[in-house]
Image (cartoon, rainbow, N blue to C red; front, side, top):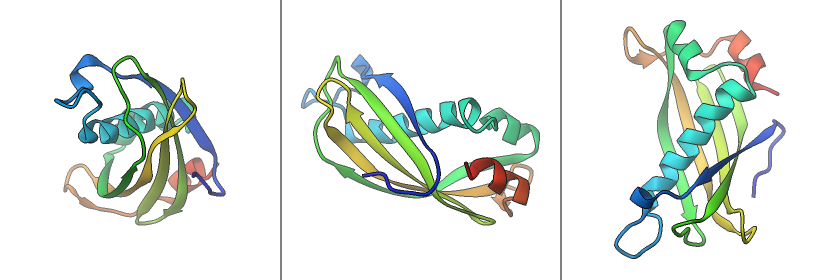
Length: 139
């Protein structure tokens, strides 16, 4: 379950036909796509710092580590709620946790953590997260 001192935001997505694997449920790799799509939307909508804003400033976020637990399968036609929130933010990057919930049943389908590092787009190397960015994300 999500537990942190920062805000938790929610996005809604539908399972698409191309998400389904040979076992007739969502392929495990798609769960990562769902979380990244939710974070992309939430960066702009809730933090006021879109992915494009970072790119214009010469920065980008890259995933350095993912921990994911699969609890229940999502199926074709399911609608999911993706709840994410930052649990740690510092000059090296951040850790965001997530839950994917089946909207119809209210049950947890998956949860986990994403670690992100800030990179300088011109060098493609890690760089420091500024105090301004830390404040912006610490809501």
